[in-house]
Amino acid sequence: MSNFLPINTILVPQGAEYKAVYRGLSGITGSIPTVVAIPVGMKPLLKYLQQGQFLAPKSRVLIMGLCGSLSDRHTVGDIVLYQDCIYQGKQEECDRTFTAQLHSSLSEKVSLVKSLTSDRVIWSAAEKHRLGETLAADVVDMEGFTALEFFNAAGVTVAILRVVSDDCQHNIPDLTSAINSDGSLKPFPLAMGMLRQPLAATRLIRGSLTALKVLEQVTNLLFSR
Image (tube, rainbow, N blue to C red):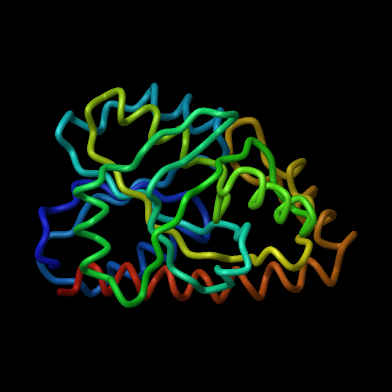
């Protein structure tokens, strides 16, 4: 494994992202972290974390998954390491030492970024540009701030490593209505959202497949040293 302290747990959104990380760890010999599938979205994740007793203080938790770009500097397949997350004017920082250790391990392959967490899908290119410029954020996700706020308060060491799955130049389908209150995906609204915007859907699928492959590769790289 890499030459930094062991990671106890990887948290990754359920579904394709979880499967990609799991595949990345298959075949790794020696100690590997526990991989936990988490629900998508801020409220479902907070509820899940409040119910879970799987982490002790002084644990080292790595959150992995996909994210969207809010900047021309970051495009599909780019690996990003969060410095912090913002949400409605509040900011939570990732652990600096842990983040620096991850950065040195992946230095030539990863960019340090500032992230925005959103309680809905940011689907339009215009809104991505506007948010990126007004908030000075590089990427967006739907879980980062909630996780950092929870774990920072609990004394758990956290870093966030994600892969960009959609750029800021194109729309993606608005799939907010396809996310259940428990953070799972509703198949029918998901399919309908895709069908209503076929070009955007094709782009999202292609970008997601590319990003998932990179997520699998970076997981393997991180733990095969």
